[in-house]
Structures are given as structure tokens and as C-alpha cells.
Image 1 (cartoon, one colour):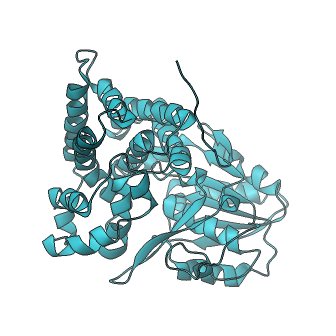
Image 2 (tube, one colour):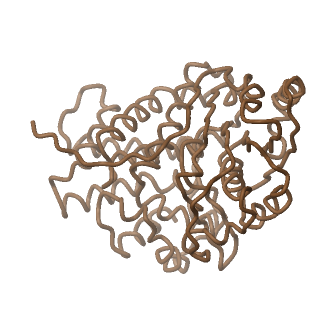
Length: 397
């Protein structure tokens, strides 16, 4: 069999994965120096008791530290304010303990602390276009949710709300975390609604990177392992009051793989649209991904059968569909149909909201289509026209 792949992989963090691994965070912080900036969410760590344990353990190390709280999706103003406050403080390490918004904020802060300038100098598409070359302050990422995979990516997503709003990335390999600590124990207390939305984000990232035009043998292997782990662990992890560490570990692993693969292979039309939906309409990112995924897959399959019946993405969609067939179906057309039907059933059972519930109407479509042409659309497996993107939105209003 001919095997002549050509691909490139960017750097990854040191990855520490396992239940209980976050308890050793203070020692890892101290290994970088004596002055730390800790970025967290507004209250979830305090509610769960981890923050008190972390503070007690940090007091046993030769550390001084300050805390920054991120209460919503980070904005350029938030990043600039923190950088201005701590630029002269000689911070040795930035530590993020929280969800994707916390990790993205900390990532941008770490990138700019040594320099003291505005993130708007470097923000893709809306900034001043000044190249960023680093260095960044060392960064430790500790995700407490499973969905964004931000602990493994090289970009910080920042938002500005409103009619002229945006959701854009500050991106550079120097921003990749030095260490990522993934502790599935944090998911034990994650609310079902949040886990559902973020889980759909992770699965979308896995599936879109699996069928991406930029995928390669390594990302195929990683995304496939993440897809399998998600299918095995996600629904058991969110159903009922009991959450087994084994299922939570599968979900956390799937999220980590989704971050690794999106950074290496890119995404697709769902994430192309999720950006303007979040910027203009205040739709949570996981909800935007979850509500669009089934219809995006259905449209991609239809377009690929028209554009390129030899596309490897068609076989990959069928392979994912086979996970739900119990070995009773071997026809690829039927397996692709089964995949779409399964995704639609997931969206219904998770009660993922439709776009119309956020005020999206027919009149909203032109602006959303215009805002969707990001790099993610370039790696989408099928070539989508403006009409196709409009159809995707219209199906979920």
C-alpha cells in the first residue's frame, strides 16, 4: 500500500493526566520560580473546596502569588488590564485553573506579560497586524471542564460583544502551555447542562478534525481514539447522580484529544459559524457547536457525494457511524445516515437549544454567513457556498 504522507506537527505541552493529579499543582508551580499569577473562574473552585486546599498547599511552598478572576468569556480589555497591572511584577509563571475562558485569558496574559503591550496589536483579523514573536511567561493549564481543549492549543480566543463584536484568536506557538494537568476529578461536580454543551464542543472538534482537509495519520489516530472514548463515556458521565472516574476520564481524555487535533488539523463549518454566533448573538460556544453539528455533517455528506466521491472524509464519516451500528450494518451510505440520525438524537436528548431561541431570525443570516469565512471553513471537508452556510443556519432556527 502506498504511504507517502506529508505533514507538520506544532509543539504540545507536557501532559499530566489522571485523577488526583491536580493536588500536586503547588509543587509544580514552585518549580518555575517564586512569583505566580493564578487565573481562576469566579467561584466554582471555592464551591468545590479545591481552592482552599490549593491555597493551603501553596503556603507550604516558597511562593508569593496573586489571583485574577475571569467571570465570563475574556475580552481584550480584560487581558490588557491584567497585563498593565502585573507587567512590572516579574511574574515567573501564570497558572490557569478553570474552564476554557479562564485558560484562554491566562494564555493571552502569559503571552503579553513580558512585553506589556495590548493584545489588540496581535489579534487576528481585527488587531493592528503586528507579528508576535514571544517570549511568553511560562504557563500551566489546569482545565476543570471538558470541552474546549484549550490546554493543548496555541491560541487564546477573545471576544467583544455587540453589533460590531468579534470572537478572534491571539495565536502563536509560544503561547502553548508548558504543562497541562488534566484531572478528571474536577468533572464530578460539573453541572449536567454545562457538561452537555462542552461535551458537544469536544465531540465536534474531534469529528471536524478527523474529517478535516488538513488531517494527517497522527491526528487521525488521536481523534479516532478521542471519538471512541467520548462515545463510551459521555452519556454515562452525565446521566444520574453517580459519575464513575472511569467515565469521567474518558470524557476528559476526549476533550484533551480534541484540543490536540484542532491545533494540528483545523476544524470545519460548525466552528466557522460558532465564531459569529458567539460574537453577535451571545450564544455559548458549546451550544452553538452542539446545535449545528448534525446538520453540518448531513450537508457535508451531501456535498461530498456531489463534489468528490473519493473524499476520505466520506469513509471517515461512515467509520464513526459504525460505532452505533453494533456490527449490523456494513454499507457506508447507511452508516453515514446512521451517524446523522444519532447526532440528531443526541441533540434532542441533551436539549440543546435551537438558534431561534437566541433571537436568530431569517434577517440574521446574511451577517452570520459573512462572518463565518474563517480558516475553519478552509479545512472543512466539503466546499461550502454561501447558500450552503445559510441552509445550515436555517435548519437550526
